[in-house]
Length: 83
Length: 429
Image (cartoon, rainbow over all chains, first blue to last red; front, side, top):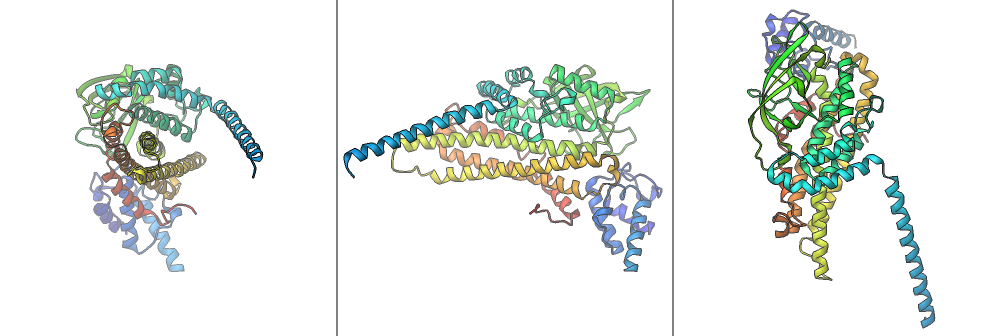
């Protein structure tokens, strides 16, 4: 999953550094993630994992690291499987 | 009906008219005395601004007389909370000040509006840092005028990125910035400067630095001979600031921009544009009445345009009211949730941002259209400068509205914001 997230970051987040060089817990805002880029990042994540991120999860924390994105995707996938 | 009842009816009508007129005078006096002190002060400043508006425009010079008057009336600290020594006015009240000033002199009003958006940044975002509190106290005491240096050569107009960076050595910093425009930079007592957080930080990882005049060196690199808004003196500079770490506001600039700068500047700029438009519509109205008086019984051919212009102006004012309500809702919500901002759902801030953007788009373009209509109504009397019906300056000043943060850029940003919104962007019902 984190490989897919890194690919998405490379494609849609327009970071200042290559996504491959980022640690899982690296601060994405510090790596140059802008608020406009988060919009595209969100849409790409939703498309890739076939999920819809609900408004309550749409926070600055969600986009703060690869770890937090992966945790959110896992949570939503589990909720979907249980439904 | 005989003659004597006619006379009686006439007398009764006269008496009623007299009573209505007397009631009107009482009402006028009541309203005049009920007018808050800040609005009366604003009208006094506006009168002075109007006297010098033509000279300010002709010579592209700063409206010094209006700002002397504003300092005297203590209007520069109008939006600072009473607890910190200011007048504690709401955003809606300050919007009223901007509109009133803009009816007299666009440049005066726009400088005042830009100052207030800087004030909001410090007041909202300094989190009680002692140096910043002292700075606010000086602003109140000495009626400081604040300016902003966000644009940068090589970066262009995108204020959300910077090239220059803060270099901290033992708690002291030095920054150098090539700014293509710092409006009224030469006349400001303090400039708020964006920069990257550190030499290693990315272009969008910005902070906002509060730089009083005595910590600044400004070297003028280009003048301001522009189509309109000539009194804003938006010249280009090389800016060097030195100071202490406490001068850097403690929160990221992205947050300052979203929460304070964007809502305050867009609502107050809109107020300025509405004030300019209102003055042009008043001139057209006066022209129309003078024209109609000359030919009783027939309406001038432009009559329909006047009705349209007034209708559009009222729509602009209503749109502004919606935005002011949204901005004040957002700021009270923000205060309640400030502690856990990192976990605040972004939905509210996205919808506020797109609302402020669409306000800017619609008011800036409608203002121009309406003033163009007033030119059609006033005809050659409006086209000529220095008549009672001139609207040329209004039109030239308003051509800046779609350019101050380009409407093209704002349209794209807004479309982006709408991508992220699941809830309808069409407002509450």
